[in-house]
Length: 304
Length: 282
Image 1 (tube, rainbow over the protein chains, first blue to last red):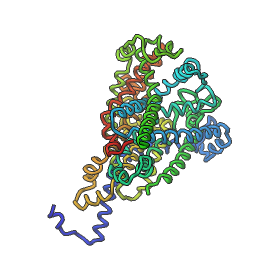
Image 2: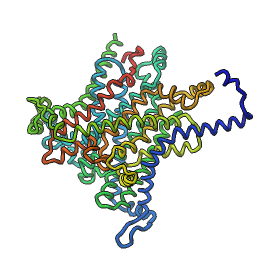
Image 3: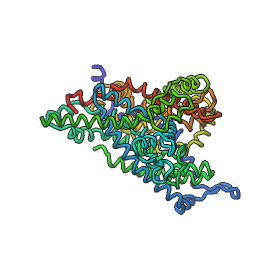
Image 4: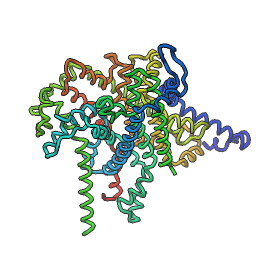
């Protein structure tokens, strides 16, 4: 060790600095390469292949021809597209704040030690590992308008039965309920892990300064949770913009297109009507909107 | 005195909030669990009118569990998924944390672009890439092997982003100090950053594990042979036999839902340091 420190630096200050810059770059790429190869091969390359298809039109007469943005122009004149866009934005304006705020609040609630809180925490974590498909299967029976558990409970306490997934005004909210049942438990875990990163000393210091619990959360916890909050916000937004299973399993976009999100419309176009170009055009619209929203979220929660 | 009243009120409010949330998460689970101990004929019969029988099987029977484990592909699916998920977690935590480290603490040309592409990679609807991805896997000759589900699952943009966010919170001075001491980047990553990031590692494992645990479309497309079938696909096959064995589906769902929980519960110490340990009463 001492020998290393004492060994003369070869070359001047500048060249050694350059060399270090070069080694740093090599080191950085060595760290990145294994994961980025996977991301490129299994995610970015296939989506690039797919997006190109949205610029082509396939017909029996002329085969596949390049049509530029024609598929997008057709989309803009399609009322079904605008309805789906409306549903997508409505769904996301509701579900993202609900899931983020409640999972953060619950994480703050159960982030303490003790026997009772351990029991609460375990119960609240229950849906975490339940797949959305299974959650949908469970909730379909529970929300059944005639023989469902929820209506059965509502009747038992003297309330009227609700139509839930079969009503145009309640279907979207029922999906929000189902997705949040799993989502809140799941995302809470990430907030909880973020809370562990906050040093105890900061809480101790602010207690000595006479801060109340609420003040501590506002001035100590939340600012330091920003990085993890950005992760959860972006992850929740992406997951919900791409949400597909509940529409596929429960509503098929109905009733009256009230749950016909862009994601579901893209699936119907591509896989039911075999209009792959339209499906991919819608997919790129989803990707574009999602990018804009996430960019805004990055700005909003920017690290100092 | 007034302060005491306030403390008690706060305590009551805290319990109330916890109980509300717990009821919301527990009721569907409890109902599914109790239904899994019922014979098929009682599953729906007990729903209306609402009574204690809705939640308590009278008498309980293990019929559904016995059938699930002896007559269906479920146990095989369970083992297959455990193997796939654990492999993905081990390699995924390693590779994605390395990339996250580079994005958080190293400087290199093209950083912004590569990070943006990483973010974009988890905004892609899987349904949209399933067809081209299928032909890639087909070209590799991986169809109906575990490789088809494991390898594309390891590199994960969301997990890279997760690690990046946690690593960014570790002071850069630690790197500078260690570099002066002659430590290589690899050494800094493995002896400083990883040990300081246990909550992040647990979270990333959860992300990767649950991702594999609940995967349905992709395993259905590329690994649908009976020997490689994964848990969600195996569950869906209970549905498509001569009748729908709801009690078996519930049994399968309860087991599938509880296993991630059993794994995460012992890890709670990395999750909950608890504010109360610092002497602050809630």
